[in-house]
Length: 284
Image (cartoon, rainbow, N blue to C red; front, side):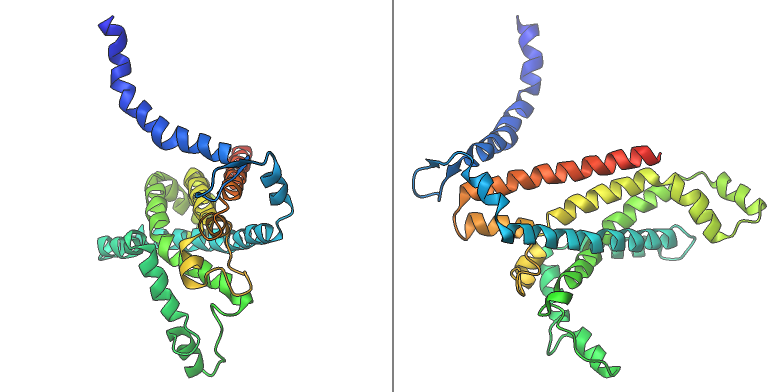
């Protein structure tokens, strides 16, 4: 009898953790989607009302569109910059360890601190970027006050903060490419660009896929940057989906509706990652 119980005792900490911190929150969130609740008053069963509200909520769909715009700017920019820096760091250069640490440093710094720093750089009147533009004879730009510039500005800042992580991942991928492939290509007269596109990129496809997936999930969770820098403005142009869900839950106390938005958003992320996986498998 003891032998039968012993394996369950070994895995019980994980099972308890899963039930308390994963299973119960997910189950309770799904339960909330069928109710109206403001935390204070008792829950009121509303059936599918929250889902119907989601379909006609124009502001939510705008926040989702803003998030997609962010992803379309952020992911390609992050991959290009990270791969370029990783390729440089993969060469025989001095102080390689220092540069790796320097690129990774913003990743471990608080997102709020980074956001406040860039908020000062983007300042319209006294921001460093606008002062540089004035010195070279150009007009100031409303980096965070112009609806056309606000989301690209946030995407650039997010790329700067997160690129160090993907530089490290790409470095690992680059160092797994067998050197004899490059040596054989050199004997055939291939230049650096030809070796990069014909050998490096195909060989690090799994790393690129992992970076795309991580960037997508991270981009969908965009919250701190617009929350601190713009509050979702101007004219809701930087209102991300996660920020909108947060406002519904903790500003307006529509917990049931916020849970519905979160559940739908989680399914959307799962669907996008699944499509990416299928696309990469097809390419390979």
